[in-house]
Length: 149
Image 1 (cartoon, rainbow, N blue to C red):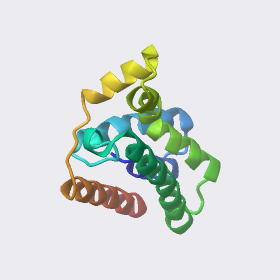
Image 2 (cartoon, rainbow, N blue to C red):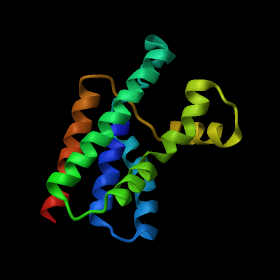
Image 3 (cartoon, rainbow, N blue to C red):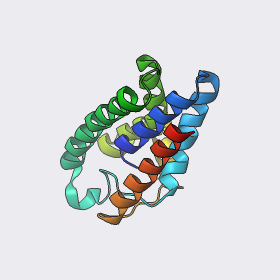
């Protein structure tokens, strides 16, 4: 899933789960659950796009994710603490942050490599357009359900 997708999940968790002892593990678990659904992300087709393009797209995805997440908070869940949202976004994106040094920069540190291998075991990619459509539909449903309940 994109950084934006994980950020939205972290945002919803922050809005609905006030206890960080429960919310942080839930945010990490949401990363795994989200990546099981077929999806597109900025590293899909990295061999064709090239590392530099993936890095640039990932940067914009990261910024967009924070903008969307904070928009959701301001509009739908204004009572939520903004710093808490930030922490939940980082927790929900954490596995990607840990594998990026290995995947994009070739840093062969055991934790980075292990995280990459771990994620490859459940990450299911699907190229555009359906990989994006799936992601938007799932995230929209989660946000709507969070607002309703």
